[in-house]
Structures are given as C-alpha cells and as structure tokens.
Image 1 (tube, chains in turn purple, green):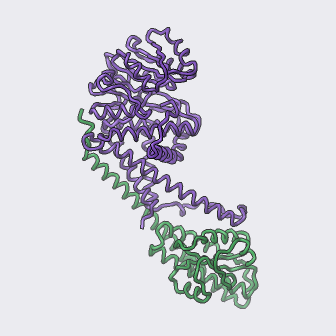
Image 2: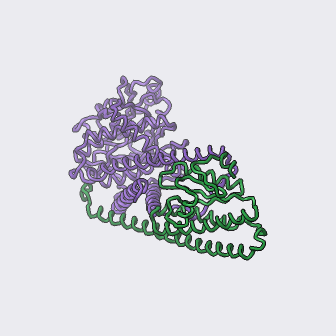
Image 3: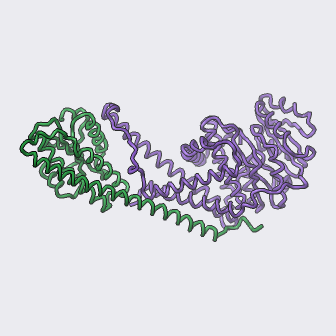
Length: 413
Length: 210
C-alpha cells in the first residue's frame, strides 16, 4: 500500500509539474507581449512616499525618484510624514527645494491613511507609492507607464528585488522575490494578479475617485486593492523590467511578523472577496486563487510530516548513540554507494518535480535580468523556504482562527 | 487581444497530458532502475551460494586439520553487504514484494549455513569468535529492534563476533526449525553460542555475554 509520504510527494510533484508546465506554456504563448513599446505621450504621475520613522532610508528613496528618467513637469513626488517620532520630517524638508517635491506631515494613522492623504490632493493621471525603504531603477517609470495604453488597465505592478542580500534570510527572500517576478508576469498574462505590491505599483487616479480610496484591509491594502480591481473586471498589468529594490528583513522575528501580516491579510481579504472564486473570474477564480490555497495546504502537510519524521529519526539516532555510550569512534559511518540511492518511482517523480522547479528558477533568472549569481540564494531557498513558508502560513492560519489582532510587523512591503 | 481572463480549457487539457506523461516516465524509470538493482542482488546471492558451497567443501577437505583455517572473516563481509542491500530493497519495494521475499528467504538460508559452519569451527578449534543469531521483527511489534540492531552492529566493530540477523516472521522452514529448537517466540531474541536470550539486551549486558 502507498505510504502517506509517497502520496504527499506524488501530489506535490503533480501539482508542481502541472503548474510549472502551465506557466511555461503561458509564457511561450505570450512571449511577444512581455514588454511594451514606450509611450510617445507620457502621462503625469504622482509618486507618494509614505514615511514613518524612516530618517535613515528616506534620502535614498527620494534620490532614486529624482534620478528617474521621466519629464520633471510630469512627475510629482509627495512625501507624507505619517507622524514620525524621529527626524523623518526634517530629512524630507531638505527636498522641498525641488519644484516637483511636496512634503506633508500628518498625525500617525497608518500607511493607508498617508496614501489617501496624498491621493486626495493628487491631480495627475497616475499615482503610486514608494515605501521609504525602497528605491527604483531610473528607467522603471517610463517602462511601467507604457502598459496604461490599454484603457482597462487600472494598475501596473513592477518587478521587485531584494537589495544587497547579506543574511541567509535575505538570500531566501531574494530568490522568493525573483520567482515572484516570473509568477507576477504569468498572472498578468492570465489577468489574475491578486497582489499589487506596495512599492511602485502605479494606479490610474480615476480608479480611486470612482471605486474608493485605500482601505486598512488588515494592514495589507495592496492585496485588498488588487482584489477590488479584479472584482470590477478591470485589469492589472505587470512590467517585468521596471525594477524596484527593497530591503528584506534580515532577522527571523521581523520577517516572521511581516509574513504573518501578509498571509493573514491575504486570507482575510480573499474571504472578504470570496465572490472572486468561480467561473465568472476565469483563471483567477478557477485556477490561480484555488491553486494558491492548494499549494499552501500541500506544503504545510509535507513540511509537518517530514519534520515529524526527521525529529523521530533524530530521536532514534540519539537513543541509539546513548545505548553505546556515544562511542562514535567505533561506528561505521556512511559510505557512498549508488545502490543505496533512492530510486523508488516516487523519488524519480519527485526529482522530476525538483527539476521543473529548477527550470522555473532558470527562466526567472533570465526574465528578471538578474546579473549576479543566484546560486547561493537558490541553495538557501531550496533548503529552508518550504519549512519557513509552512511555518509562517500555519501561524497566520492559527492567528486567524484565534481571531488575534493583526499588527504591522516589518515596515517594508 | 483575446480575453486573457477566460479559462483556456484545451491548454489545461494539454498540460494535464504533459504532466501525466512526465509522471509516467518517472514511474517507468524508477521501476526499471529498481528491477536492475534486484537482478544485481540476485547475482550477488548466486555468487554467495557458490562461495558458501566452496567454503563447505574446503572445510570438508580440511577435516583432518580443520583448525588450520586462519581467515574466519571469509563470507561475513559479503553477507553483511547482502543483508544491507536486501533490507534496502525491502524498504524500496515493500515487505510483501514476492521478489524481495524470495531474496530474503535465500539470504536467510545462506546465513544459516554460514552460522552452522562457523559454529562447528568455533566448537572444534576453540577460535575466539562469538556467533550470534539475532531475531528481529519489522512489523511494528518490536520497538527495541532498531536499537538492538544498532548495538549489535557497533559491537561487531569492536569484538570478534558474527551477527546473523533473521526476520522472526519469515516463513522459511529452516528458520522455523531453528525457532522451534531454541523455543524463540518473540523479537528481539538472541542465540549466543547456542543459548537463547529473549528481550532487549543493553551494550553492557551483551559485553558480559560474549
């Protein structure tokens, strides 16, 4: 009889191979639509920089905006100090000398209130935010606005990358973000983008006027607004070469808090917009959203089962070593022999699944134009991401079930 | 541009077919490799049978001076190698696999023949060697078997002992006979120099017995 582990590996491999093959086919089919020709008539844009205690990183963010290759008369930069307790406002004020930069200060009310504060005063065609811990590539905006040539497009997402990863956790995030670049492009081809990342997603200002401003949305206003756009049957595009760089949390606890907020926010918002499931919303309702929950369920099951098995084996090994008074010098250690390689059909199928995942990573590297080596990030990602993903999601689900209040966690998003 | 939101069912059909194809190739390759491994074990078993027979013959020829045999380690390494491989294949293909059962049966017979031969040698020549028959069960009814096996493997590295691991649930008639003669009913059980010890034995208890 087939064991639980085998059944799980078969299911995960099947789902993994199926989705990867599907995504690759979608990419091949749409290969001519990956990029857009730049617009001759550029729209006017407001970039909002909501800042709360960002005195150290604000300058880099604003400097990167000033270096954008975009006509200055069509680009407004609005810095909103959301009641910071440090010198954020002072740093921001230094930039008031630029004619296209406006600085506002308001009492603290959360990111969505800072964004709405600026949006209410906005008179450009497009608007978007750039968190004060992120910065942009100089060509990002010009490339991104080209996708607004389609009148139904309400938002265009950029490609996010982790800037200068140092710790293991940052390398894992780097790989995750790079894969995110591929996935977001595919989701755009399927009209199924369900998260418009905070940093540098551009929106039509008219959308906010017609369909309402940002909502608190469990501290994930970027998920809520994406789902809202999808509900209205409007479109969200992705610009794969509009690069935005952000600092990923370097430590375990801030990263955990950030992820719980993201996943919990996703869960809560999807429940609020449950009407998106079903035939009416095509790829999003029948494939992308259901598949994201199936993946979460499978990875949690696989991770918990494997961790359980690993702990049991460690316990048995410990007990065995204890039984010989830890006299390890007289043990015959592992010796490599091809014969003892697991060649069960399930292992070969699992290997195929991993191979497909590697293909996806190679495509991602190509698509994201990442010049630096991704080997280190990939190895860390491959070794630890599934455990972390399962852990964060489990906590998010437990907190949702316990109805615990959501907190902001790490600021960058 | 066509409506990208709409589900493209023919594409999903094609993806499903490709996935099934990749899956089938994986299963086919896995089964093929396992089949090759099985035959390599079968070959090793054949080799062992020949070695066992020739060593018995050698023993018979040397009957007049059997104690002139100096190398007592012959066969034990090969037996050990085979035991690991059979155990691995048992995990890979499942305990109920007829090929595995056949191999295990054969392996047990080779082991028992070797055990009898070595016992005779030790008795007649007073060699410093302890022969241990270890009865284990891997049907979930012997939680101590993993540890007992580990201790025996460890002791084999530091003392002159031969360990013959026998599945207590084996249907082999020779094993049944051995169990009946020594009244072995539960696992773990050990036969050390002809004496039966039932239940788990610690490292120190075993050191006293050998």
